[in-house]
Length: 345
Ligand SMILES: NC(=O)C1=CN([C@@H]2O[C@H](COP(=O)(O)OP(=O)(O)OC[C@H]3O[C@@H](n4cnc5c(N)ncnc54)[C@H](OP(=O)(O)O)[C@@H]3O)[C@@H](O)[C@H]2O)C=CC1
Ligand SMILES: CC(=O)N[C@@H](CCC(=O)OP(=O)(O)O)C(=O)O
Picture 1 (cartoon, protein in one colour):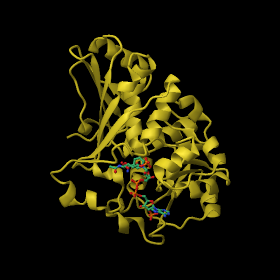
Picture 2 (cartoon, protein in one colour):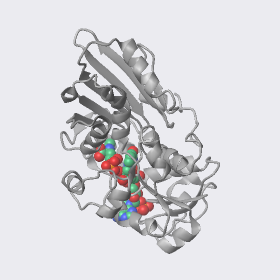
Picture 3 (cartoon, protein in one colour):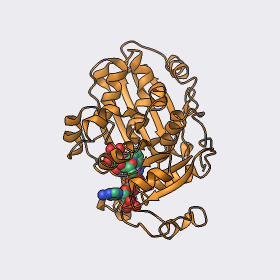
Picture 4 (cartoon, rainbow, N blue to C red):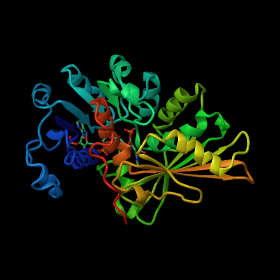
């Protein structure tokens, strides 16, 4: 099966290329670049020399649909909402990595993303692709909204215990940290070397566009309106997200019992690894892989639960989960092409 990638020279795109290169049933058909069409991919990214030989293309819906079976959009929000419908109308399965089709409520999208939402017809059609939770819905998706990087780490870390009703939902605080590739390849003042090296920066406090996405998932899973405190930080590393999450338990439960709840919940989900007592994951332990690793600790003095959830933002937080979803949409084993061991150290 041939896959087209739109948003060709971005980080999401080159991670898709890396993962598709070893996928047994999908291969890269076309790579579309808005800014560098006509140029060889390896001129932009020399690490792809002799691997991707075709030139970067312009976006042409007729040609792309003739030459490809599935389309991955690694384009910014606000761009995907314009381009995805063109390929859906050609009957192609589309997987969008941006935030454009994740929120069901168009007004909510506009107020958090600060630009116009996608056409309501496509918002209705879109399936939210948190693979471990919505695999049944994903099987029949034609337009798949791949989750955000922070929402993936956050919701996988919260759902098992929040769904049980064991948590005071008003007490949830998420302290999230991301490496700089989370912001994409574009240059910004806050991500250039002298600003981020030897530095940690909190940003978008109370205003992050992933807040409504996380709350939408938690509400769907519990039937309750949940308002979270979500603080994001940029840290001096290339890849990786760590979400440290704190919440009050309604009644005391031991760390062992919480771990047992998570182990049962993720028993059939190979990409979520729940750590034993006293074992807390680091971002490096999932680097380059599709794993989400979760560590758990209950403090009996405060009766608060701490959940530490780590992912590689470009893999489980973007391209890896997109391929996991493509696997599910095509009826293949969800692990297909994604079984690489994390790159350690
Ligand atoms: N980085 C991450 O960790 C994650 C990213 N995402 C989302 O995935 C998407 C891609 O992210 P990422 O690759 O990191 O971002 P980048 O900024 O690295 O790449 C996005 C690419 O989209 C293309 N593009 C930019 N503007 C336009 C435009 N006006 N019209 C058409 N194409 C355009 C450009 O490539 P070209 O000029 O070659 O077309 C650009 O390089 C974004 O929506 C992002 O929010 C989601 C989860 C995690
Ligand atoms: C480190 C960093 O800046 N990360 C970005 C993640 C953006 C992203 O992935 O945006 P969508 O999921 O909404 O498309 C941010 O916090 O805005």
